[in-house]
Image (cartoon, rainbow, N blue to C red; front, side, top):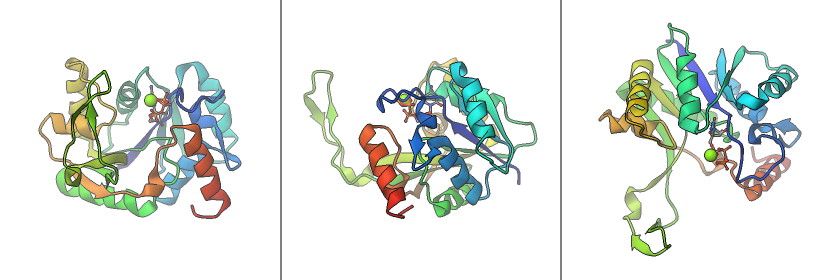
Length: 229
Ligand code: CTP
Ligand code: MG
């Protein structure tokens, strides 16, 4: 079974407000992206990894990854203006022999190895799977003036995480459809579901949070310092 991993890392990190691109910010002595790649290596799915990088910073990313001493093959591909466009570029760069695709955000460095394996297993059974966790907060739907519109029942709500795993033909078709219909989503499982395909949810972890804000980065640093991850 041929598995290829795509790591979207081309975001600007607007909410993090860092000087460097988010994927290269320091996290306990290593760039965030390197920590995430090492986690994928530990799970045994780092072989010829495709990393989407900001087109303006390809040289810098190349330099950082070359200097990181990674002992697996990786390739940098220029990303796009939205996460979905970056992932699309990664899919276009897949070699033809690939059967399964794992997509994992560079911004989630602490994904537990067992979540990755469970997502692969679930995808093998139905064609597509995503890691997610049941929402602990009550989620409010608001209008553009910040007035409450409705409150969906919490027991059906899950917060989406990555990795997401797909049979290659399913994800290729979903991205083709999304591009054609100008449909934009913040994850890939949603595209697959929009075409009517089943997507299995696999239990994620609160440790698999996405580093988005300065507080997230601070908490991630503390988790490393205290030896929790
Ligand atoms: N991503 C990407 N290409 C983009 C936007 C995002 O590859 N054009 C990647 C990010 O690098 C990240 C993941 O998608 O690993 C999730 O995106 P997010 O957390 O939103 O990161 P940023 O877009 O960098 O952050 P912000 O939205 O605050 O600018
Ligand atoms: Mg973003």
